[in-house]
Image 1 (tube, one colour):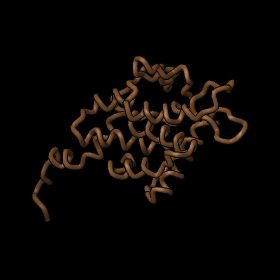
Image 2 (cartoon, one colour):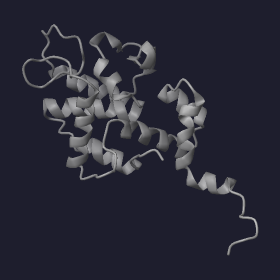
Image 3 (spheres, helix red, strand yellow):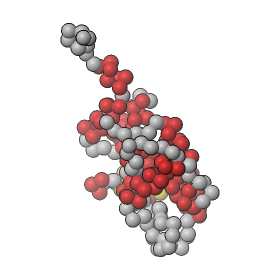
Length: 190
């Protein structure tokens, strides 16, 4: 079964970011990209300043297999990005959005760094799921969508899955729907 956080737990996770500190602003923006847009950790790391189209309200995402897709920049996510970018040093050669917060100021080293941010945030929020990586928030988004009535096709579109089979794993988390499909055991209960 996919591992996920309940909606209230996702909100608790987002609330532990200190919105007054540069690190907290960066981490909140990262967590929102994972939780609201379902980005993968590697996709977050690759975002450059040029990928954000403020006027169109879109974000260019470089996904698996060198695919590039434009996603709507949700207001909450855009605001968090803007808050973070306002305090980012302006005169840097690095065009990546998310930087290390100590010198040398360069882009995050990889998806493991994003997963570390998720793990530290989970610990601060006193949440202890079995799986603590960045993908947890992607699974949480899909599970929330399913519970709100989204189809597997819609979930696959949001998560940018190339194959329907990849999205089918989320059908397993909707226990009520699965119970409705289950046939009674032949011969009754013994």
